[in-house]
Image 1 (cartoon, rainbow, N blue to C red):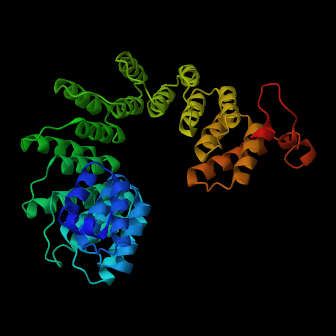
Image 2: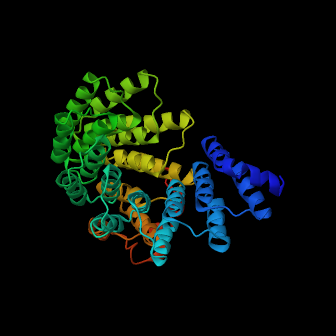
Image 3: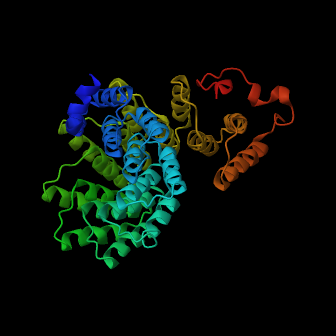
Length: 439
């Protein structure tokens, strides 16, 4: 393209860049910008901002940073719109630290932010679980003579919910009413989610009813969070009633719905209901994921259904899914609750063979199973491995370890605790399949 060609088309170049933006043709946009620079045709801020926005649609954050640096070096100076576009890219790419760095750079340049930019930075705070910074940005609207909008309130509530600070989330919701910003469904859903994280099921239910009173229609997300809040609050019958209401409203259950309902039944020790929900979900042609299986195994554990738990573990493996640490821990817990310590050993060994490193949640039920069965030799061996793993023990776990030692001391008629050569910690492979040096 000649200098004269660019000169004749300069009036149309922004239209061309906007067309590339709509078509997500970021490489063409960058090429056009590079060629303009090569031909020494100076671009304005709007041209650069359009290219940065195009890169944002393609999540090309590294190239966007290069364009931003070019603006600082060659000009024109980045504007608030530039910063807004760049922060939005960082939010999409889960680079919240870079977004906050942009915010700090904007202040160093003494630029006045707008609502769009602050909303983007609050979203970055949500991604980085920086809820205090999000609240600080929210509180700063008045000092900057700006007015928060629905997106501002929704993003701030979501940031508080993710950090499990439900009182602050509900405080932001109340502030929206004081500022005459009508809450939309997104704001309500974020608030219910915050109540879910705090196990505040009565408040979640109240917000669900408030949605209806404002002529809004609760969606699947609204019900999922409410059902989950009831589950966390041990209100399994309430959870089932909201599921029934969800069906009456012709809303389709998701994997999240299924997992929350099964967990609720588990807490209510209604394992039959959990199994029934799982079977109904599967009969609809929906593929359960690891989370659903894990919650079902936990529900079976509450009902002392260790055999069914192990059957589900085998089913997971048969369907080509890879059990995670939560699934294995749930299966071990099921065996422990049913006093099946040998089966718990086998599950623990299977977990080790799968390449998963045991967590505290793996050791606790297994150690409890040994303690209940009076298997102090196995228990002592496990305590040693637990100590070597460097896990930080909570008070309940420490009490369990003390119980193991007391149990061992009471049963140590042969003096094995005092004689290392006779200690069970150096015992050979046992016929029951539990090999101590593998734990």
